[in-house]
Image (cartoon, rainbow, N blue to C red; front, side, top):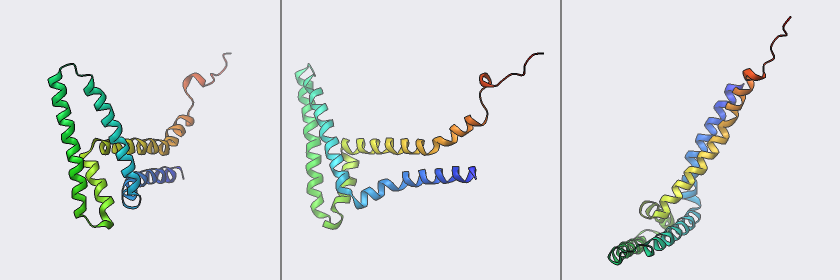
Length: 146
């Protein structure tokens, strides 16, 4: 009975980990786009503040040029989405932004961390039961000395 429960929790954890991302991507892609846009804004804000701290004016100028290139990439993604049919535009935009924007990479990391914690919580009772089978040596009662 215990083996069956362990097997079921493992299967459930792997199923959740493998199915959450594609389901979100297909049915609720707008929510993923909001997360990607917010993450991209936050990372861009941090990079802007970091660029302002560069003491060398030439290096600061080159860094702002690189940031302008990343803005051009975002505009190119938006322009390319006009070629995609409206029914699939959100899904394609999620894929493009996950691949080419730092906010997409951060979102994948956040989802991976959440799924890792869910997996650890689902597999935790197995380790607790193993500890409960036999108490540690300092809790065992010794036979009385005669």
